[in-house]
Image (cartoon, rainbow, N blue to C red):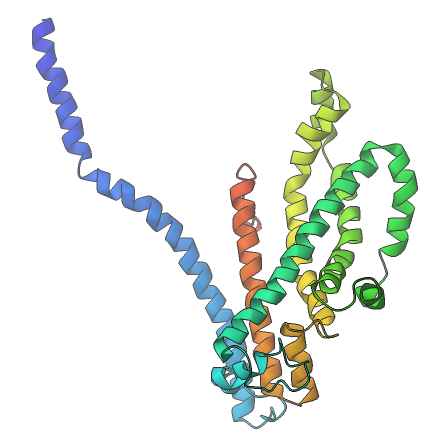
Length: 315
C-alpha cells in the first residue's frame, strides 16, 4: 500500500506543478502591474492638473486677456529653453570683466544652478532636522533643558526668516554658508515645537506598557517615543521642505554668487517676464520632485505605518 501510494502522491505533485505552471508567469506579472497602475494613474492626474492650469493660461492669452509682455503663456517661456538657459550663467558674472558668454554652456549652467540651490536646501534641511529633533527630545527628557531653552525658542519662533538675513551676512559673509544658515534658522524653531507636540501626542498606553515591562526612561524614549514620532516628523519635514525652497531663494537673491534666486533677481532687474516664469516653473518642478522623493523614503523607512490617504473617499 505504501508503494501504491507513492505514484498517487507523485502524480498529485506533478499535477499540482503542471496546474501551477501556467499561473507562474501571471503571478510574476501581477506585482509589476500592481506597482505600475497607481503610478501611471497618479502621473496621469498630475499631467491633467498641470495641463488644465496651462490650458486656462493659454486661453486667456488667446483671448487677449493676459498681456504676453507681462504674463507670457507657457508655450512662450517653455518653448525657448536655449534662450532662457543662457541667463543661468551667474556663477562668475559678479566679477568685473566677465561677459555673458563666459563659463559653461547654457545647459551646463542650468544644471550647475539647480545643483547649487538643491544642495543648499538639502544641507539646511538635514541640519535643521537633526538639531530640532535632538533638542526637542532633550527638552522633554531633561527638565532643566526645557526651562532654559523652550522660552527662548518660543520667543524666536514667530520671527520672519527675512529678519535673520543681515545676521547671516554678518556672521558668514557671502557664499554658501549664509544661504544654508537661512534655511536652518527658518525651519529650526518650528520643527523643535513640532517635535515637542509629537512627543506630547504619543499614546500613554504605549508608555505604560513599556513601564510595565520594566523599561527605563532612556529605553522608553529610544524604543517607544522616538519611533512613535517618526511618521509625524517626516510629515513635518515634507511640509518644511517647501519653506526651505522659499528661504533659499531669498538668501541667493542677496548675492550668494549663483543659484535660482540669483536668476530671479536678474530677471527682475532686466524686466524679463519669460525668464521669471521659466525659473518659477523650474523651481516648482524641483519642489515637486523633492517632495516625491521624500514620500518614497517615508514609505520605505516607515513600512509599518498604514496608508490611510484614501480612507475618507469611501465615506
